[in-house]
Amino acid sequence: MRFRARNRAANNEGSGAVKVLVLGAGVVGTAAAYYLNRAGHEVTVIERQNAAGMETSFANGGHVSAFTARPWASPTVPRMLVKWFGREDAPYLVRLRPELRQWLWGLRFMRNCTTARHMKMARHMVRLSMDSFEALKEVREREHLDYDQRANGVLHVYRSQKALDEAAGGERVIEDPRARSEVVDMNRALAIEPALDQARQLYVGGLYFAHDETGDAHKFSTELAAAAARHGVVFNYGTTVRALVREGDRIVAVETDRGRLSADAVVLSLGAEGPLFLRPVGIDVPIYPVKGYSVTLPTEGYNGTPSVGIHDQEIRVVTSTYGGRLRAAGTAELVGYDRTITPSRADAVLRGVMQMFPSGGDASRAERWTGLRPMTPDCAPLIGRTKLSNLYLDTGHGSLGWTLACGSGRAIADLVSGKKSEIDLTGFEVDRF
Image (cartoon, rainbow, N blue to C red; front, side, top):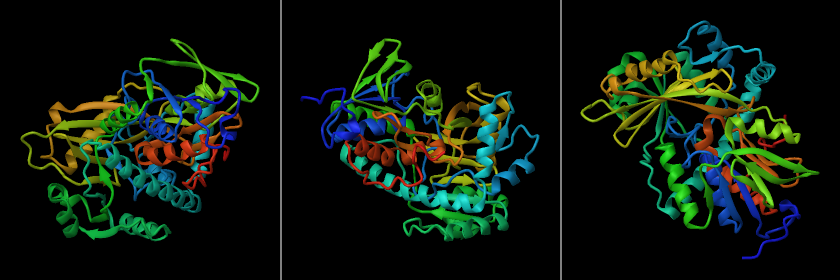
């Protein structure tokens, strides 16, 4: 196949095939590479790990939140910060640092915690998550992906009637008719997930999203990467991006620890570290790392393991079960780029899942993990072309990387192809801050 000259901007070439470098093989970058390949482009992926999906989504909560994608920035956050202030096991924990970017990001985040801003962004996110979910199901069927998926819904449980009523009221103002939920009392909740009987005294009821799914995000990433590779995508694993090289209004090369690479277009999907590469070429995006934890318990020999995804809205812990494992994930910690596993934080997640499901798995053999979510102040991703003519962003998905990956990947493929995205990207513009 012949490709157009490299000095021509990818966004101006109509449907012509171009050479594309995708930086990062997390679930988001892998999905972008897959759809760019389907659009006819020659795609190479640069990834420092030795496989796809090894960082942000490696051991996440396992929820595909198609019907429950909401920004974390909400009116409940200030109340939770006050309620849990000073506690090491707080769902939201800020470790203040002598770092201006942390303070500025935090102030911007708090500005987005109003009801009006939360609901406006929630509508945008639900729209994108629905479109992304349809894309995920299509690629799953087309490529015969198996990632221990379960399509039996996600149940959000609440420990007070006030909290449940507020959540139910918020759902009613989501205008997308596809975002269906069922308000349930505990009798109905136990019919949906009998394993919750172990903790029925904790909860008053919940919201059931019957069409949400769960699964292994890491396995999804590796399966999708394998499918992309079969179709011709080249994955350069074990290769670390060092810098972007700018000349004029273009990125002319990407410096790696294995040499310099060039292409017609560059798509950046480097998670929380993306801003470190963008600032030197004159692009400043407000993405900050938000640290999260998970614990994974073996379930063999245990009879209290849930089959439905659960989200405890009081302690902000989610659970999912797949492949003989019970996964629980949660917490949000602002501590910069520190990936150290703090025992007290991981143990808070473990206590949470043991409160819910005391007979759900072997806590003594729990595997602890931490990752950094790339979060913007309004909790929505940056999807589109930058002020540089051949540099695109597909990043900043926060806690919804897996949920939104296929939708944003399809959109990026359209934009690199010089077409208007078939997926509505209102609210996700790269220059909105």
